[in-house]
Image (tube, rainbow, N blue to C red):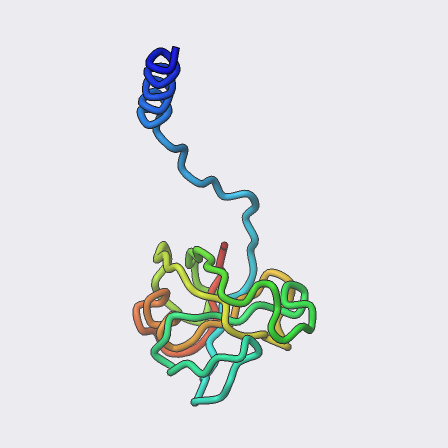
Length: 135
């Protein structure tokens, strides 16, 4: 009896291992304006000091809920540059995964404020301006 139970358990485990894990799916797409900010060695609302070269972002108070640290601190978001706001910012189509490390007090609900490191990757090192972002 023990041998049959063991064989059944091993067989079930083998079938479970053979089933591929489904990829994570994006639940909701948010859109807004992408801007840039300078960390300049200051501590962000998530309690971390990051260099301007870090690939991080600040979300609006809509998401951060005025908490320090917020439940969104440390979360990773995948951001796509969907195009310029007529001010010549390049990089349309660039995609970057950033870590939420701060709050953008002046941002609207879907806006994201990027560190210089993230901005450079999303805009091909464009001069500071704005672009349309989806995340």
